[in-house]
Amino acid sequence: QKEVEQNSGPLSVPEGAIASLNCTYSDRGSQSFFWYRQYSGKSPELIMFIYSNGDKEDGRFTAQLNKASQYVSLLIRDSQPSDSATYLCAVRGSSNTGKLIFGQGTTLQVKP
Amino acid sequence: EAGVTQSPTHLIKTRGQQATLRCSPISGHTSVYWYQQALGLGLQFLLWYDEGEERNRGNFPPRFSGRQFPNYSSELNVNALELEDSALYLCASSLLIGPGGRDEAFFGQGTRLTVV
Image (tube, rainbow over all chains, first blue to last red; front, side, top):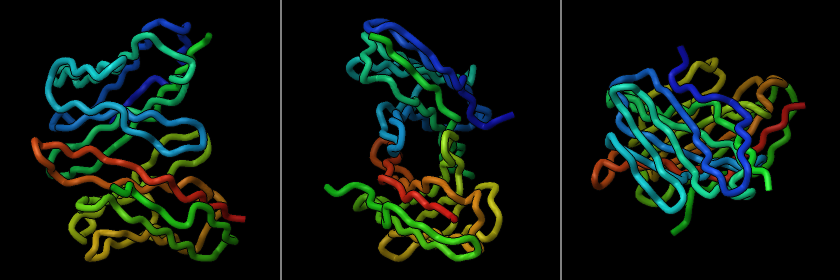
């Protein structure tokens, strides 16, 4: 079982729609959860972080965390063509390991 | 405030040579992470340093090594380069545990290593 799993996609949504990206993780002791956006040939850019169960909203982005289900998601409202990128889920393991592990990423395509 | 800086941005080496990649973290950050991203693939965890100590390493052969200096900058060394080592090498820095328990990691622009 991979430590952090994402559907590789591509996920295709029309402009203005809601894009929903999902991630599961295996280390039940994980404490910190992150979403990064990576454009082709560029380095990842942090767009959201969440530490507690529930929802966290920042502009058009909402991160959702359910530690009992070991599940974290990212919603992008009013998707724009500029949102087309690969979205990486990252999880920091429990304190005795602490390493920051990334999923393989989900490619999002927003069609005008 | 300066972000994470990596050097060089591009590096071309021949098979069997050694490569040295450098990373300067965000001021105040004590943790440095190294990742390898081969073309079209995900980020593979290489090494994690904090306060000058290697805290964890990924599933890579021993010819991948590194160190963290007293100023928290870090170096990644790859010995006996192989063609499949060609990739984007990314460095990220964070606080181990920051105010409010926050520990977000920020990336540098990467070093693209090409082995010919």
